[in-house]
Image 1 (tube, rainbow, N blue to C red):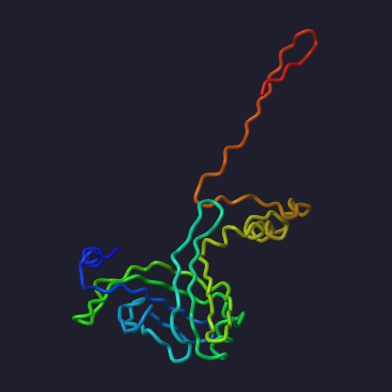
Image 2 (cartoon, one colour):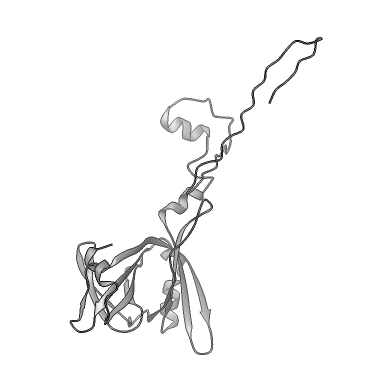
Amino acid sequence: MDSVLLSASTAPHLRAFVAVRIELLSGPIINLIDGSGVVTFPVNGSSVTFTGYDNTFGSLGAANSVAERVADEAPRFSCTLMPPSEQALGTLNDPLQQGSKVYAWWGLYNDDTGTVIGVPELLWNGKLDTVKVSISANAMTAEIDTTSAFDRLFTAEEGQRLNGEWHRSIWPNETGLDYTYDATTDVYWGMEAPAKAAVSYASVQSGGAMNQYR
């Protein structure tokens, strides 16, 4: 964490904020903060302004903490937008938006000076995965679930198979794996793979019988 931000985190009269940036593949970029107001800080080398309300996509209703479970789940982050129109809701829920970059920061804002304290902490850098739409009598929401690059480690059928086509892409004309199909290996995330059982056999001739030791 930035040293200025860290030292100011316990100071009074400062307002904390969460900023979310969604770079939709269709073109629009959404820069929102929780609550109202305006904050500006550098993103990828350029100064970017975040507001509490976007004229097209509405406001940020919620931003959940980054979740990660050891060994069986990649890190995930979700946030909820409150779009003002069906068109905005449809844009967010378009399957072609899957893979859009999503960022989230935590920072501090000085109301007296109107400036951001130090450098906001980047909490999340992932990609849009799914969108869950909820429509009620008085509100429409879009819960955006995102995933990290590590999620691909759990795709057992990708990158872990042994087959002839893959083998020949590295060693042309090799046919040694032509009859091997979908041989996969388990990928353990966040922990060491369990030790494999070792079996040793020894024999002692005693009355013609063979004794096995495990």
